[in-house]
Image (cartoon, rainbow over all chains, first blue to last red; front, side, top):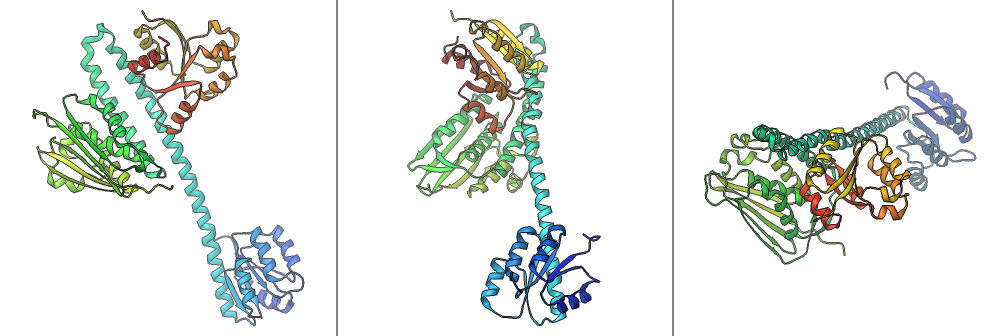
Length: 365
Length: 133
Protein backbone atom coordinates (compact mmCIF):
# COMPACT_ATOMS: atom_id res chain seq x y z
CA UNK A 1 0.00 0.00 0.00
CA UNK A 2 2.88 2.31 0.88
CA UNK A 3 4.63 2.12 -2.45
CA UNK A 4 1.59 2.90 -4.58
CA UNK A 5 0.48 6.51 -4.81
CA UNK A 6 -3.28 6.90 -4.41
CA UNK A 7 -4.95 7.65 -7.76
CA UNK A 8 -7.70 10.26 -7.79
CA UNK A 9 -9.96 11.01 -10.74
CA UNK A 10 -11.83 14.31 -10.90
CA UNK A 11 -14.55 14.92 -13.47
CA UNK A 12 -15.87 18.45 -14.01
CA UNK A 13 -16.94 20.32 -17.14
CA UNK A 14 -15.35 23.51 -15.86
CA UNK A 15 -11.71 23.30 -16.90
CA UNK A 16 -10.47 25.90 -14.41
CA UNK A 17 -11.71 23.72 -11.55
CA UNK A 18 -9.70 20.81 -12.89
CA UNK A 19 -6.58 22.95 -13.18
CA UNK A 20 -6.93 24.28 -9.67
CA UNK A 21 -7.63 20.79 -8.32
CA UNK A 22 -4.60 19.35 -10.04
CA UNK A 23 -2.34 22.11 -8.79
CA UNK A 24 -3.52 21.59 -5.25
CA UNK A 25 -3.40 17.79 -4.99
CA UNK A 26 -0.79 16.59 -7.47
CA UNK A 27 1.90 16.29 -4.81
CA UNK A 28 -0.19 14.10 -2.62
CA UNK A 29 -2.03 12.01 -5.21
CA UNK A 30 -1.68 10.83 -8.75
CA UNK A 31 -4.38 13.05 -10.24
CA UNK A 32 -6.43 12.22 -13.33
CA UNK A 33 -8.96 14.64 -14.75
CA UNK A 34 -11.69 14.59 -17.38
CA UNK A 35 -14.11 17.24 -18.60
CA UNK A 36 -16.98 14.85 -19.23
CA UNK A 37 -18.28 11.46 -18.11
CA UNK A 38 -17.51 9.77 -21.43
CA UNK A 39 -13.82 10.66 -21.26
CA UNK A 40 -13.76 9.69 -17.60
CA UNK A 41 -15.20 6.24 -18.31
CA UNK A 42 -12.68 5.69 -21.11
CA UNK A 43 -9.94 6.65 -18.70
CA UNK A 44 -11.33 4.23 -16.11
CA UNK A 45 -11.18 1.40 -18.65
CA UNK A 46 -7.40 1.50 -18.60
CA UNK A 47 -6.62 3.02 -15.20
CA UNK A 48 -7.42 1.68 -11.81
CA UNK A 49 -8.52 4.65 -9.70
CA UNK A 50 -8.97 4.61 -5.93
CA UNK A 51 -10.98 7.79 -5.36
CA UNK A 52 -13.48 9.13 -7.91
CA UNK A 53 -14.71 12.71 -7.61
CA UNK A 54 -17.42 14.06 -9.86
CA UNK A 55 -19.25 17.30 -10.36
CA UNK A 56 -23.00 16.72 -10.45
CA UNK A 57 -24.06 19.15 -13.16
CA UNK A 58 -22.40 18.28 -16.45
CA UNK A 59 -23.69 18.26 -20.02
CA UNK A 60 -24.93 14.81 -21.03
CA UNK A 61 -24.46 12.38 -18.21
CA UNK A 62 -24.91 13.77 -14.67
CA UNK A 63 -22.42 13.13 -11.87
CA UNK A 64 -24.72 10.59 -10.19
CA UNK A 65 -25.23 8.66 -13.42
CA UNK A 66 -21.49 8.63 -14.01
CA UNK A 67 -20.73 7.45 -10.46
CA UNK A 68 -23.35 4.73 -10.82
CA UNK A 69 -21.41 3.38 -13.80
CA UNK A 70 -18.08 3.85 -12.02
CA UNK A 71 -19.17 1.86 -8.98
CA UNK A 72 -19.83 -1.11 -11.22
CA UNK A 73 -16.34 -0.90 -12.69
CA UNK A 74 -14.56 -0.33 -9.39
CA UNK A 75 -16.68 -1.33 -6.44
CA UNK A 76 -13.69 -0.88 -4.12
CA UNK A 77 -13.20 2.76 -5.04
CA UNK A 78 -14.53 5.58 -2.87
CA UNK A 79 -16.73 8.18 -4.53
CA UNK A 80 -17.30 11.83 -3.81
CA UNK A 81 -19.90 14.12 -5.40
CA UNK A 82 -19.49 17.86 -5.76
CA UNK A 83 -22.52 19.94 -6.47
CA UNK A 84 -23.63 23.53 -6.52
CA UNK A 85 -27.26 22.75 -5.95
CA UNK A 86 -28.39 21.56 -2.57
CA UNK A 87 -31.18 19.49 -4.01
CA UNK A 88 -32.21 16.72 -1.63
CA UNK A 89 -33.25 14.50 -4.58
CA UNK A 90 -29.73 14.66 -5.96
CA UNK A 91 -28.30 13.77 -2.55
CA UNK A 92 -30.61 10.76 -2.16
CA UNK A 93 -29.85 9.62 -5.70
CA UNK A 94 -26.15 10.02 -5.16
CA UNK A 95 -26.20 7.89 -2.04
CA UNK A 96 -28.46 5.19 -3.43
CA UNK A 97 -27.24 4.93 -6.99
CA UNK A 98 -23.71 6.22 -6.89
CA UNK A 99 -23.03 4.82 -3.42
CA UNK A 100 -21.00 7.92 -2.64
CA UNK A 101 -19.10 8.24 0.59
CA UNK A 102 -18.77 12.04 0.68
CA UNK A 103 -20.71 15.03 -0.50
CA UNK A 104 -19.12 18.47 -1.07
CA UNK A 105 -20.84 21.74 -1.94
CA UNK A 106 -19.61 24.22 -4.46
CA UNK A 107 -17.75 26.49 -4.17
CA UNK A 108 -15.57 24.18 -2.13
CA UNK A 109 -13.36 24.95 0.75
CA UNK A 110 -9.91 23.48 0.05
CA UNK A 111 -9.42 22.23 3.54
CA UNK A 112 -12.81 20.51 3.66
CA UNK A 113 -12.20 18.95 0.26
CA UNK A 114 -8.79 17.73 1.36
CA UNK A 115 -10.27 16.11 4.48
CA UNK A 116 -13.07 14.56 2.41
CA UNK A 117 -10.56 13.03 -0.02
CA UNK A 118 -8.50 11.80 2.92
CA UNK A 119 -11.58 10.10 4.34
CA UNK A 120 -12.29 8.54 0.97
CA UNK A 121 -8.73 7.18 0.81
CA UNK A 122 -9.06 5.70 4.31
CA UNK A 123 -12.36 4.12 3.35
CA UNK A 124 -10.89 2.68 0.18
CA UNK A 125 -7.96 1.23 2.07
CA UNK A 126 -10.10 -0.37 4.75
CA UNK A 127 -12.39 -1.78 2.07
CA UNK A 128 -9.47 -3.41 0.30
CA UNK A 129 -8.01 -4.62 3.56
CA UNK A 130 -11.33 -6.15 4.57
CA UNK A 131 -11.55 -7.87 1.23
CA UNK A 132 -8.05 -9.30 1.62
CA UNK A 133 -8.80 -10.44 5.14
CA UNK A 134 -11.98 -12.09 3.96
CA UNK A 135 -10.11 -13.89 1.21
CA UNK A 136 -7.54 -14.98 3.76
CA UNK A 137 -10.26 -16.21 6.09
CA UNK A 138 -11.96 -18.04 3.26
CA UNK A 139 -8.66 -19.71 2.40
CA UNK A 140 -8.01 -20.70 6.02
CA UNK A 141 -11.56 -21.96 6.24
CA UNK A 142 -11.17 -24.12 3.15
CA UNK A 143 -7.87 -25.45 4.41
CA UNK A 144 -9.37 -26.25 7.78
CA UNK A 145 -12.20 -28.15 6.12
CA UNK A 146 -9.70 -30.13 4.06
CA UNK A 147 -7.61 -30.71 7.15
CA UNK A 148 -10.52 -32.06 9.14
CA UNK A 149 -11.61 -34.24 6.26
CA UNK A 150 -8.09 -35.60 6.09
CA UNK A 151 -7.96 -36.16 9.85
CA UNK A 152 -11.27 -37.96 9.74
CA UNK A 153 -9.92 -40.37 7.21
CA UNK A 154 -6.14 -40.40 6.82
CA UNK A 155 -5.38 -40.22 10.51
CA UNK A 156 -7.91 -42.88 11.40
CA UNK A 157 -7.22 -45.25 8.56
CA UNK A 158 -3.93 -46.69 9.95
CA UNK A 159 -5.55 -47.01 13.38
CA UNK A 160 -8.42 -49.04 12.03
CA UNK A 161 -5.89 -51.31 10.28
CA UNK A 162 -4.03 -51.83 13.55
CA UNK A 163 -7.29 -52.59 15.35
CA UNK A 164 -8.21 -54.95 12.54
CA UNK A 165 -4.97 -56.89 12.94
CA UNK A 166 -5.33 -56.98 16.73
CA UNK A 167 -8.87 -58.31 16.30
CA UNK A 168 -7.52 -61.00 14.00
CA UNK A 169 -5.10 -62.20 16.66
CA UNK A 170 -8.05 -62.88 18.94
CA UNK A 171 -9.19 -65.50 16.47
CA UNK A 172 -5.87 -67.33 16.51
CA UNK A 173 -5.46 -69.72 19.47
CA UNK A 174 -1.71 -70.11 18.95
CA UNK A 175 -1.28 -66.41 19.78
CA UNK A 176 -3.05 -66.62 23.16
CA UNK A 177 0.23 -66.06 25.05
CA UNK A 178 0.51 -62.62 23.53
CA UNK A 179 -3.06 -61.69 24.46
CA UNK A 180 -2.13 -59.18 27.14
CA UNK A 181 0.32 -57.43 24.83
CA UNK A 182 -2.28 -57.17 22.13
CA UNK A 183 -4.77 -55.88 24.67
CA UNK A 184 -2.33 -53.14 25.59
CA UNK A 185 -1.92 -52.19 21.96
CA UNK A 186 -5.66 -52.29 21.47
CA UNK A 187 -6.28 -50.11 24.52
CA UNK A 188 -3.90 -47.43 23.36
CA UNK A 189 -5.15 -47.48 19.79
CA UNK A 190 -8.76 -47.21 20.94
CA UNK A 191 -7.78 -44.26 23.08
CA UNK A 192 -6.14 -42.49 20.16
CA UNK A 193 -9.08 -43.32 17.94
CA UNK A 194 -11.51 -41.90 20.51
CA UNK A 195 -9.42 -38.77 20.74
CA UNK A 196 -9.65 -38.28 16.99
CA UNK A 197 -13.39 -38.89 17.07
CA UNK A 198 -13.76 -36.29 19.82
CA UNK A 199 -11.73 -33.76 17.85
CA UNK A 200 -14.01 -34.24 14.86
CA UNK A 201 -17.08 -33.91 17.10
CA UNK A 202 -15.66 -30.73 18.54
CA UNK A 203 -15.04 -29.31 15.10
CA UNK A 204 -18.46 -30.28 13.81
CA UNK A 205 -20.12 -28.79 16.87
CA UNK A 206 -18.19 -25.57 16.63
CA UNK A 207 -18.79 -24.99 12.96
CA UNK A 208 -21.89 -26.67 11.70
CA UNK A 209 -25.25 -24.92 11.67
CA UNK A 210 -27.94 -25.91 14.10
CA UNK A 211 -30.26 -28.44 12.48
CA UNK A 212 -33.58 -28.82 14.24
CA UNK A 213 -35.52 -32.05 13.91
CA UNK A 214 -38.02 -34.00 15.94
CA UNK A 215 -36.21 -35.73 18.80
CA UNK A 216 -37.24 -39.05 20.23
CA UNK A 217 -35.27 -39.12 23.49
CA UNK A 218 -36.17 -42.72 24.14
CA UNK A 219 -34.67 -43.91 20.88
CA UNK A 220 -31.68 -41.57 21.14
CA UNK A 221 -30.63 -42.66 24.64
CA UNK A 222 -31.30 -46.32 23.94
CA UNK A 223 -29.11 -46.34 20.85
CA UNK A 224 -26.27 -44.51 22.63
CA UNK A 225 -26.45 -46.85 25.60
CA UNK A 226 -26.40 -49.83 23.24
CA UNK A 227 -23.09 -48.74 21.75
CA UNK A 228 -21.50 -47.94 25.13
CA UNK A 229 -22.88 -50.57 27.51
CA UNK A 230 -20.26 -53.22 26.67
CA UNK A 231 -17.56 -51.10 28.31
CA UNK A 232 -18.89 -52.11 31.71
CA UNK A 233 -21.61 -54.74 31.87
CA UNK A 234 -22.11 -54.64 35.64
CA UNK A 235 -23.70 -51.19 35.62
CA UNK A 236 -27.36 -50.89 36.50
CA UNK A 237 -28.75 -48.48 33.92
CA UNK A 238 -31.99 -46.74 34.83
CA UNK A 239 -33.62 -44.60 32.24
CA UNK A 240 -36.85 -42.74 32.75
CA UNK A 241 -38.21 -40.54 29.98
CA UNK A 242 -41.38 -38.51 30.31
CA UNK A 243 -41.87 -37.08 26.88
CA UNK A 244 -45.33 -35.54 26.99
CA UNK A 245 -44.62 -33.06 24.27
CA UNK A 246 -42.98 -33.32 20.93
CA UNK A 247 -39.42 -32.05 21.15
CA UNK A 248 -37.64 -30.22 18.36
CA UNK A 249 -33.89 -29.85 18.66
CA UNK A 250 -30.47 -30.54 17.22
CA UNK A 251 -30.13 -34.33 17.20
CA UNK A 252 -26.40 -34.28 16.44
CA UNK A 253 -25.59 -32.03 19.39
CA UNK A 254 -27.95 -33.85 21.75
CA UNK A 255 -26.21 -37.07 20.72
CA UNK A 256 -22.79 -35.56 21.44
CA UNK A 257 -23.98 -34.36 24.86
CA UNK A 258 -25.43 -37.71 25.93
CA UNK A 259 -22.62 -39.78 24.48
CA UNK A 260 -20.01 -37.87 26.45
CA UNK A 261 -21.96 -37.74 29.71
CA UNK A 262 -22.87 -41.43 29.59
CA UNK A 263 -19.39 -42.55 28.61
CA UNK A 264 -17.98 -40.46 31.48
CA UNK A 265 -20.47 -42.02 33.87
CA UNK A 266 -19.26 -45.44 32.74
CA UNK A 267 -15.58 -44.47 32.92
CA UNK A 268 -15.67 -43.00 36.40
CA UNK A 269 -17.53 -45.75 38.22
CA UNK A 270 -16.39 -46.73 41.67
CA UNK A 271 -14.95 -50.26 41.39
CA UNK A 272 -15.28 -50.76 45.16
CA UNK A 273 -19.04 -50.41 45.14
CA UNK A 274 -21.56 -53.28 44.95
CA UNK A 275 -24.18 -51.75 42.76
CA UNK A 276 -22.86 -49.38 40.14
CA UNK A 277 -25.58 -47.13 38.79
CA UNK A 278 -26.25 -44.65 36.02
CA UNK A 279 -29.57 -42.87 36.09
CA UNK A 280 -31.00 -40.70 33.35
CA UNK A 281 -34.19 -38.75 33.88
CA UNK A 282 -35.69 -36.73 31.07
CA UNK A 283 -38.78 -34.59 31.39
CA UNK A 284 -39.94 -32.95 28.18
CA UNK A 285 -42.40 -30.08 28.28
CA UNK A 286 -43.59 -27.71 25.57
CA UNK A 287 -40.89 -25.22 26.50
CA UNK A 288 -37.87 -27.36 27.38
CA UNK A 289 -36.26 -30.70 28.13
CA UNK A 290 -35.07 -31.18 31.68
CA UNK A 291 -32.32 -33.75 31.76
CA UNK A 292 -30.56 -35.27 34.72
CA UNK A 293 -27.63 -37.67 34.37
CA UNK A 294 -26.55 -39.18 37.69
CA UNK A 295 -24.01 -41.81 38.65
CA UNK A 296 -22.72 -43.22 41.92
CA UNK A 297 -19.12 -43.24 40.73
CA UNK A 298 -15.92 -41.82 42.15
CA UNK A 299 -17.17 -38.21 41.96
CA UNK A 300 -15.23 -35.01 41.35
CA UNK A 301 -13.24 -33.03 43.92
CA UNK A 302 -15.07 -29.79 44.83
CA UNK A 303 -11.91 -27.83 44.01
CA UNK A 304 -12.09 -28.94 40.41
CA UNK A 305 -15.81 -28.62 39.78
CA UNK A 306 -15.63 -25.19 38.17
CA UNK A 307 -12.84 -26.30 35.85
CA UNK A 308 -14.12 -29.59 34.49
CA UNK A 309 -15.67 -27.90 31.44
CA UNK A 310 -12.35 -26.38 30.38
CA UNK A 311 -10.58 -27.74 27.34
CA UNK A 312 -7.96 -30.41 28.15
CA UNK A 313 -8.58 -30.10 31.88
CA UNK A 314 -8.05 -33.41 33.68
CA UNK A 315 -8.08 -34.34 37.35
CA UNK A 316 -5.60 -36.77 38.90
CA UNK A 317 -8.31 -39.43 38.84
CA UNK A 318 -8.98 -39.03 35.18
CA UNK A 319 -5.28 -39.51 34.40
CA UNK A 320 -5.66 -43.18 35.25
CA UNK A 321 -8.59 -43.64 32.93
CA UNK A 322 -9.12 -43.18 29.25
CA UNK A 323 -10.10 -39.52 29.61
CA UNK A 324 -9.01 -37.10 26.91
CA UNK A 325 -9.92 -33.78 28.53
CA UNK A 326 -12.20 -32.90 25.64
CA UNK A 327 -15.49 -34.62 26.45
CA UNK A 328 -17.02 -32.19 28.93
CA UNK A 329 -15.68 -29.23 27.00
CA UNK A 330 -17.58 -30.44 23.92
CA UNK A 331 -20.66 -31.01 26.07
CA UNK A 332 -20.55 -27.43 27.29
CA UNK A 333 -19.93 -26.06 23.79
CA UNK A 334 -22.77 -28.13 22.34
CA UNK A 335 -25.14 -26.99 25.09
CA UNK A 336 -24.23 -23.37 24.45
CA UNK A 337 -24.95 -23.84 20.74
CA UNK A 338 -28.48 -24.98 21.48
CA UNK A 339 -28.97 -22.23 24.11
CA UNK A 340 -29.17 -24.68 26.98
CA UNK A 341 -27.60 -24.70 30.42
CA UNK A 342 -25.67 -27.30 32.39
CA UNK A 343 -24.86 -27.47 36.08
CA UNK A 344 -22.96 -30.11 37.98
CA UNK A 345 -22.91 -31.29 41.56
CA UNK A 346 -20.62 -33.96 42.86
CA UNK A 347 -19.30 -35.58 45.99
CA UNK A 348 -16.14 -37.66 46.12
CA UNK A 349 -16.87 -41.40 46.26
CA UNK A 350 -20.62 -40.69 46.23
CA UNK A 351 -21.23 -39.73 42.64
CA UNK A 352 -21.85 -36.97 40.16
CA UNK A 353 -25.00 -35.40 38.83
CA UNK A 354 -25.43 -33.22 35.75
CA UNK A 355 -28.55 -31.11 35.34
CA UNK A 356 -29.29 -29.87 31.86
CA UNK A 357 -31.98 -27.65 30.42
CA UNK A 358 -32.45 -27.50 26.68
CA UNK A 359 -35.10 -25.27 25.11
CA UNK A 360 -37.69 -26.90 22.92
CA UNK A 361 -37.36 -25.12 19.57
CA UNK A 362 -40.74 -24.05 18.29
CA UNK A 363 -41.42 -25.86 15.04
CA UNK A 364 -42.05 -23.77 11.97
CA UNK A 365 -45.44 -25.21 11.15
CA UNK B 1 -26.30 -75.46 7.05
CA UNK B 2 -25.94 -71.95 5.74
CA UNK B 3 -24.81 -71.42 2.19
CA UNK B 4 -21.32 -70.31 1.16
CA UNK B 5 -20.83 -67.19 -0.90
CA UNK B 6 -18.07 -65.72 -3.01
CA UNK B 7 -16.67 -62.36 -2.03
CA UNK B 8 -14.78 -59.64 -3.89
CA UNK B 9 -12.66 -57.31 -1.76
CA UNK B 10 -11.73 -53.90 -3.21
CA UNK B 11 -9.31 -51.87 -1.11
CA UNK B 12 -6.14 -49.99 -1.97
CA UNK B 13 -4.75 -50.78 1.46
CA UNK B 14 -3.03 -54.19 1.37
CA UNK B 15 -3.25 -54.67 5.13
CA UNK B 16 -6.99 -54.01 5.10
CA UNK B 17 -7.35 -56.47 2.24
CA UNK B 18 -5.52 -59.03 4.35
CA UNK B 19 -7.60 -58.24 7.45
CA UNK B 20 -10.90 -58.51 5.60
CA UNK B 21 -9.77 -61.66 3.84
CA UNK B 22 -8.86 -63.30 7.15
CA UNK B 23 -11.97 -62.10 8.98
CA UNK B 24 -14.26 -63.39 6.29
CA UNK B 25 -12.33 -66.64 6.03
CA UNK B 26 -12.73 -67.13 9.80
CA UNK B 27 -16.44 -66.40 9.55
CA UNK B 28 -16.62 -69.53 7.41
CA UNK B 29 -19.18 -68.13 5.01
CA UNK B 30 -17.20 -68.15 1.78
CA UNK B 31 -16.02 -70.56 -0.84
CA UNK B 32 -14.05 -67.92 -2.68
CA UNK B 33 -12.43 -64.59 -1.83
CA UNK B 34 -10.87 -62.39 -4.50
CA UNK B 35 -8.71 -59.40 -3.60
CA UNK B 36 -8.50 -56.29 -5.75
CA UNK B 37 -6.15 -53.47 -4.71
CA UNK B 38 -7.43 -51.38 -7.66
CA UNK B 39 -11.09 -50.62 -8.27
CA UNK B 40 -10.32 -50.39 -12.00
CA UNK B 41 -9.20 -54.03 -12.06
CA UNK B 42 -12.29 -55.16 -10.19
CA UNK B 43 -14.50 -53.25 -12.59
CA UNK B 44 -12.68 -54.79 -15.54
CA UNK B 45 -13.38 -58.26 -14.19
CA UNK B 46 -17.08 -57.50 -13.81
CA UNK B 47 -17.29 -55.93 -17.26
CA UNK B 48 -15.59 -58.85 -18.97
CA UNK B 49 -17.37 -61.65 -17.19
CA UNK B 50 -20.84 -63.06 -17.28
CA UNK B 51 -23.02 -62.49 -14.22
CA UNK B 52 -22.71 -66.18 -13.35
CA UNK B 53 -19.05 -65.60 -12.54
CA UNK B 54 -19.69 -62.52 -10.43
CA UNK B 55 -19.23 -62.59 -6.66
CA UNK B 56 -22.25 -62.62 -4.33
CA UNK B 57 -20.79 -59.81 -2.27
CA UNK B 58 -18.44 -56.89 -2.89
CA UNK B 59 -16.74 -55.17 0.03
CA UNK B 60 -15.88 -51.79 -1.42
CA UNK B 61 -13.51 -49.32 0.20
CA UNK B 62 -14.54 -45.69 -0.30
CA UNK B 63 -11.23 -43.83 -0.10
CA UNK B 64 -8.98 -45.03 -2.90
CA UNK B 65 -6.69 -43.25 -5.31
CA UNK B 66 -7.46 -43.11 -9.06
CA UNK B 67 -10.90 -44.71 -8.87
CA UNK B 68 -12.55 -44.32 -5.49
CA UNK B 69 -15.56 -46.20 -4.21
CA UNK B 70 -18.05 -43.66 -5.52
CA UNK B 71 -16.44 -43.62 -8.98
CA UNK B 72 -16.63 -47.40 -8.98
CA UNK B 73 -20.33 -47.33 -8.07
CA UNK B 74 -21.05 -44.90 -10.93
CA UNK B 75 -19.53 -47.33 -13.42
CA UNK B 76 -21.02 -50.34 -11.68
CA UNK B 77 -24.49 -48.88 -12.16
CA UNK B 78 -23.99 -49.14 -15.94
CA UNK B 79 -23.47 -52.92 -15.82
CA UNK B 80 -26.33 -55.34 -16.62
CA UNK B 81 -29.13 -55.18 -14.10
CA UNK B 82 -29.56 -58.96 -14.10
CA UNK B 83 -25.99 -59.49 -12.94
CA UNK B 84 -26.14 -56.73 -10.35
CA UNK B 85 -29.30 -58.16 -8.80
CA UNK B 86 -27.48 -61.10 -7.27
CA UNK B 87 -24.34 -59.16 -6.33
CA UNK B 88 -24.58 -57.05 -3.16
CA UNK B 89 -22.24 -54.18 -2.34
CA UNK B 90 -21.20 -53.20 1.16
CA UNK B 91 -19.13 -50.03 1.43
CA UNK B 92 -16.37 -49.91 4.04
CA UNK B 93 -14.53 -46.86 5.26
CA UNK B 94 -12.59 -45.51 8.18
CA UNK B 95 -13.91 -42.05 7.38
CA UNK B 96 -15.95 -40.20 9.99
CA UNK B 97 -17.05 -37.70 7.39
CA UNK B 98 -20.83 -37.40 7.57
CA UNK B 99 -20.98 -36.42 3.91
CA UNK B 100 -19.28 -39.65 2.86
CA UNK B 101 -21.53 -41.70 5.11
CA UNK B 102 -24.69 -40.10 3.78
CA UNK B 103 -23.56 -40.41 0.19
CA UNK B 104 -22.74 -44.09 0.56
CA UNK B 105 -25.89 -44.97 2.46
CA UNK B 106 -28.07 -43.04 0.02
CA UNK B 107 -26.69 -44.94 -2.94
CA UNK B 108 -29.33 -47.53 -3.86
CA UNK B 109 -26.65 -50.03 -4.88
CA UNK B 110 -25.01 -49.98 -1.45
CA UNK B 111 -26.52 -52.23 1.23
CA UNK B 112 -24.81 -50.27 3.96
CA UNK B 113 -21.65 -48.38 4.81
CA UNK B 114 -19.74 -50.22 7.50
CA UNK B 115 -16.99 -48.61 9.51
CA UNK B 116 -13.50 -50.03 9.69
CA UNK B 117 -12.35 -52.05 11.53
CA UNK B 118 -14.99 -54.40 10.24
CA UNK B 119 -17.17 -55.89 12.95
CA UNK B 120 -17.81 -59.51 11.94
CA UNK B 121 -20.89 -59.75 14.15
CA UNK B 122 -22.53 -56.84 12.41
CA UNK B 123 -21.45 -58.07 8.99
CA UNK B 124 -22.91 -61.48 9.73
CA UNK B 125 -26.28 -60.15 10.86
CA UNK B 126 -26.46 -57.85 7.84
CA UNK B 127 -25.75 -60.77 5.48
CA UNK B 128 -28.30 -62.90 7.30
CA UNK B 129 -30.96 -60.23 7.09
CA UNK B 130 -30.27 -59.97 3.35
CA UNK B 131 -30.51 -63.78 3.18
CA UNK B 132 -27.11 -63.99 1.57
CA UNK B 133 -25.94 -66.59 4.07
